[in-house]
Length: 397
View 1 (tube, one colour):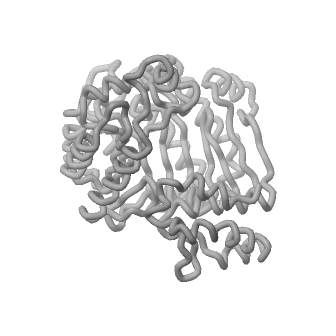
View 2: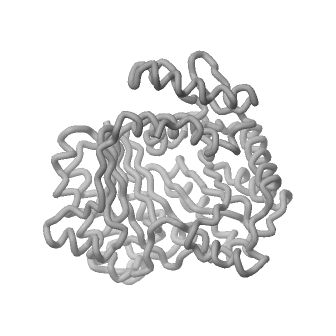
């Protein structure tokens, strides 16, 4: 079984912190969807080897697509792949798109969700598709921080979107939060958490704001003190507050940045952390089949052109060495609450790798940043905020 990721890179506007590949060239949506479908056809041989257990439409902003464009994508998915009957099918959405009056059946070459008559809500459109999980980017419930980030929704629209989604039968909703905004205080972050909990989502992902190289936020931070990063101490306090509030509210802290009601963990993202193969379709999408890793060109126009010439848009493909496979397993498994099985390391890679792992883990075990429990190596709560450095120390390459 594998996961299927479809990258929809279109955004109305770019957030100042975003380091993912996206574009505001909305007029290319229709030819891009055609190219997506053609890439699926060209890679149909991969579909014959495995069934699909999870589907994830990420971006960018997938909720920028019309109903007919989404139907076109799902028609190709179900014609080409064997999709499991109980597959988890997620789409990322912006809150302001959910309640937007949009056409029920726009033409396939429409470039905007609001370019024909017969208005409906976008939630109604999603309810007519195979989608059974929504991931919505709330980020913060403070309008000033939303404006600072160049997010296009208002804080009030998050609750409105949740209510609209519930009314259309969606009972597996995740919201994204972000902490560590410039000048953000601990009480302000506590208020964001409380407002998120009041919405009672099944899943919450929460990330510390990062100043990615080359983003507008990173450039602003170098010239304007209003955009300076908060202190590491405050960021750590925010993270611990997040864990305390969400676990007290009944959420499982099952991965460094992810919390879920029992039975509502993200199956798609969990497949990444469990080393399950996945197929990536679209510009900048990555694919992984245990032995190889590949990724597509990070340019919509180049992607469309390459597909139109009958060629796969692969930017690079690499055959993974044993050491790289070990590093992948360490990096992904240690992000989860289950941790890393020591016997799996020995079985897959041999005792030399297990010895390397344990010998490099020992200093962190001594500092109570790692723990060995029932044959599994796990990051402790004290180590979670330092996870990147800890994991780096355990790698082989």
